[in-house]
Amino acid sequence: MNTDKSIAAMVSATNSALCNFALLHSVGLGLYPRRNHVENGSGTLFKVGGHYFIATAAHCVRDLNLDQIRVAYRDSKHSDNFALRKKGSTGGTKGDPCDVAYLELDGSALEPMPAQFLTLDQIALEYNVTESMGFLFGFPSELVPKDAALKRQFRLRSLGLLTLLVKEGDPVPDFVDKNTDVVVKYPEQAIQGDGKDLHPVPHPEGISGGSIWIYNPDPDTRVIGSHNARFIGIQKSWFRSQRIAIGNKVIVWLRLLVRDYPDLRETLDQKFGVNMAR
Image (tube, rainbow, N blue to C red):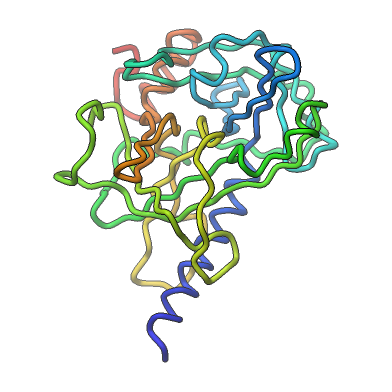
């Protein structure tokens, strides 16, 4: 057996499984800060307690009103059913260590949709970087047709990237905080989607607010799938010279929820054994 082809096939199968899973739980965000101008970001669907949220980056939405944000789902006919009720954020300006936000959704409008929401069981606060892979998912602006987006019509194309987590001792910029940040490599070329060949990866603009995952290969089984993946962070920036993407750990986002939804504190404290109000 050709070892290189075997590895490429395994990477492709893993990447494909994680892409399909992440896409079910993700949305693009159309951002309209002013007339005739559109930007986009990424977000992940979560259900926490009785609340439905989109987790994203603060710098994407902090200065926008709710009517300046459009949710774009993979099946566009359902996009208008994402009714935004409230938003909240922490940080998001230059130099802030935290850059996370939520958009709360009207749960009553979600019933007829196929959207799937992550739960607390699919989160990892602690993980082994050495024995795991990283996975980054979002909607790069480079792949969003701007003319359609200006009309609030999105044809989203996602990027799912199986990659390496930056380990303890690896060089990182001075501003990276190991207590709040998770860092993954963002190579110039990678296997994407179902393919088995290397392709150039798009510029990461638009992936802000997207999801970062830990993936633990199981050496005792050949089964590949999302059951070995856990959500660990929200992408917020990248560092071009070292080709790395940086995100806030999910605990930063959970603490934002506790700040704005005190009724969730007991649930989160008990689930993770951590004082979320700290």
